[in-house]
Image (cartoon, rainbow, N blue to C red; front, side):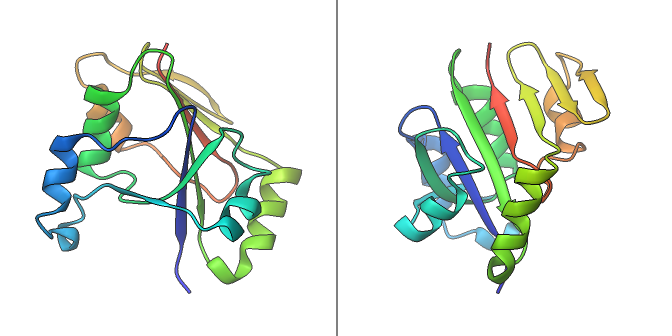
Length: 150
């Protein structure tokens, strides 16, 4: 089986109309789509130890143009989202265990343009932060990614 990606949010996730309209155009092949789906209860229980936010969704297109558009235009001050990817669905236990025993989290603050991982904190240029962020690691099997706006 292939990978599966999750997004957890501090509030119910509502896809902005601009992104939803684009997704309905059927252009998934271009890699630009960003879509969010209800997660089945089984997966919700599996990722609960990793994701702390109450609303958990399955997601596709993390790192796509429209995902970054969401971060730039639609995240409100005080919003928190968490991202996590399981590279091989059948081996989810191994990946969850790794995150719990030796976590390497990533924290991104889109309000003050910072990116932090196990190597340090980096200040992103306010004029080109999305471009810079698109070249950074967004997802890793070794930890969740928390995106905040403060």
